[in-house]
Length: 223
Image 1 (cartoon, helix red, strand yellow):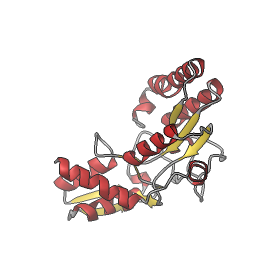
Image 2: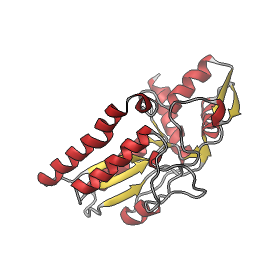
Image 3: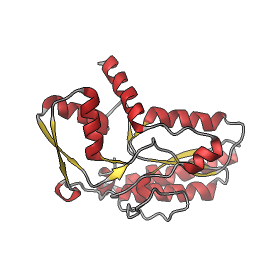
């Protein structure tokens, strides 16, 4: 996780950097296409407009630094690479913001959520479909591409939307990042511009609300 990388950069560097380099090299030597998943955390969050693939990287934390090094070695070892940068991923599986918020709202009358970090919540199912569409596409255009769901909201806004869709009564209080202590510093703004992947591969960018409703429906059917 992002915070664990602060405690053990060596492991994060092996997984996110060195292993990527080996896989990228193996793929080019064995005539395989290589698609690597990267992150919005390669940026520092000081932008006021969505990040494009041409913007300068400047990661704030160890996770972002290890992922950025992975991006670099991927490009060095495999000229046929595709890198997809995404962010704020959630799904019906495992621990993520959506599943954690649902657990908290089921148990608590009041919660606090950060309201000064902005991004685009992205359903892992949509990212998976996008990856599949790139793989089966008749033409392979190497490069870095951003992909997220459409929308710019805070974690607080995200929590409110989850509350509304699920019908919880939990009171949600907005707080600043300074009051919510985390080991790894997060970028204040990590919205990604999806124009390149849309124009190059005709990928459809889906609104975050429709995908959030779809994922919550899946969770309700599984419970």
